[in-house]
Length: 323
Image 1 (tube, rainbow, N blue to C red):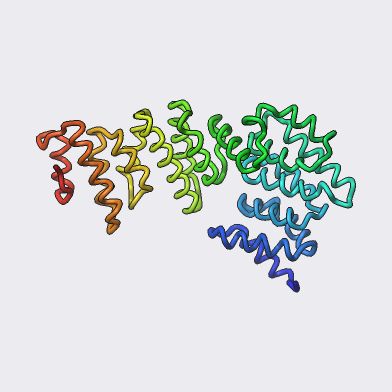
Image 2: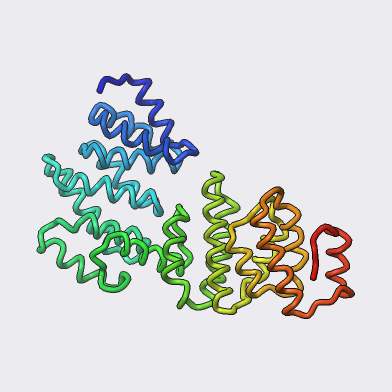
């Protein structure tokens, strides 16, 4: 594959694209370029944005060049997706013909796997990177990290989900909401209610600080899943967040918010539901879900037309039908 320096720079820039598919394409193309891209990838790493650095490490994993050792080791200290990507880049060096690089990569991964101050997700990623090492290396590591979820499952994805969930319980959210959303479906049913409440608050903070629209939407979806999990257990511990989210909606929300407010909403939620209904635009399905929730609350809470809330709703949103 013939490619010049300016094209390599353009690919590195694409690692920070808002579109995940563009980032993945850039990673793949840089991995195909191979050794010729390593120096520029390494040079770009220190001053690049976090998303770009994750992409650089993913590309370097595919290239498996000893020159990546320094940035991969430094990435382990960054936490989150970046540290997990660094573990992948180091794993690629374990079989390097450069014995010093291979030994250094091994030391870094063993250290990360055994360090109790690291995120569980990183420790599990480091452990997975060592899976093919001789028993003399892997045995002591396995014995030392038995506090990871369960029995260190043979399925790497399941192990990562377990680790992400336990990190989230401790207040350490992953950078990407996708894997946490998956963990919620498997773990929220039995988690302490206070834990789910704190997780909602942490996800809301992460949503507010996220720069990418896709990430904001992802964290919103996670919050919706958490609200639904609480609602299915009949808990109102985070009803305030549910109400405020509906009140501030600028358009349709994930359907899980409607499901939750339908199940556990009270009279204080009616104005928020009406506001969200008004902001729904032409989304008929979302409007129908909200109207059903509104009517269910009115019936369940025995709210009359003479109540102050109903009077305010009738004044501000007269078009919203009421039972």
